[in-house]
Image (tube, rainbow, N blue to C red; front, side, top):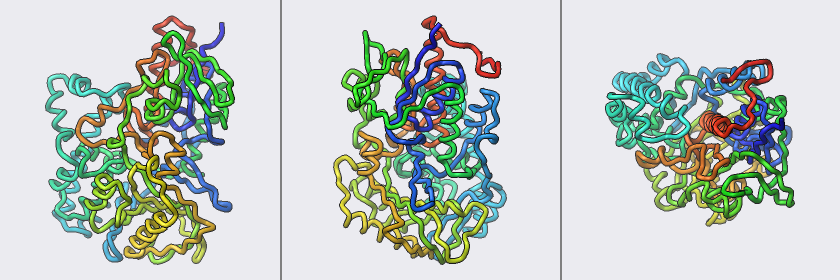
Length: 512
């Protein structure tokens, strides 16, 4: 009996997780990726011999991938080499104001006490307690659920549901909630930054997003070979179960027959038949018709005003001095609200940006004195890359503002044009079409925003969505959860139609 064929558009982390899961179940899986390597936003940029992670750089929620690999009888550590970080991130406001957060909560309590006083340390303890509660309330009914809804969240708590809804603080902004824990504006700024992990402003996002602090506090790991090594491990795993990954393949149309998705047409005219399809692309690409007019109803339009943050990034190899870089470093602007007003109200690059620096050679070792090292430098930007050209003069002005912030905090970088690769919102829009360069789907502004991301199933039978713009949201582990949700939804639907779905994975491990 022939296998059911699933075509997956996109080899980002969600598409790879879906491919891994479905191929392990014995389905005929074909992944179509328009670039020449897996990973999607987990891209690397080569500068000389250096391969610089130039997308996501923080690996959290390891349990998502532990579960994924364990489901096929594998151990994640046998395929990806992980090292837990003792220092989660280093933060600076000027040359004299620096604060590290640690994996050990008590070390962080002591550090905050020394930095801002005992009352702020007590506030941090309360913050940890409440963010843990928010995460625990949301993990099963939200993060692991195939579709988010307020009704589902309330019903999951039974009679306590309404009370639990209030405990996740959806009706307060993150910024106002942080003021209940911290008086020091620097700490409000530090913990408010977690809203940007979802591409949002802490002044507009709900306090629920404080759960990101708990996620990071629960463990951050570095990956040997960079984040791209995770994408390679997922791709290799999917192929070991029989999946085919075809690179350099542009999909021009999702084929619909009698109201059901039935395959893909490539830009070269080739037609690939399928029993079901998963789209691992931004939902805006589907809704805008990039995969054909017949597939447009598979996703709702994302308006420009609801787009998340974009970024300007510098992938760079350079000498540094004056600041003791850790792997993850944040250098704060002096007026945080003005920074987000520039982006979300004025649709402009911030006059003084907060700067993230990932010093990718600083994982447990210090570079030799005077040697160049690989860095990813990032500032937040508006997602207007489809309507703003970002000329060289504007990009250089942004660079001057960015490196001025670093120098004010004591970090000096000797950048050279020949060892620097810049990516603007316009470039991100070309990499991820129809987004304007938005890197996180829609923003999480307002208490209902997180419930407006689409789930795996669409209005078109046989067509499923996965990726950071779908539920449960952006970020590597969240996208992986969406890929797993798309695979499980597809399998359930195939079973309900009475189609032939294998019941065991290679090695005899039953998944039913």
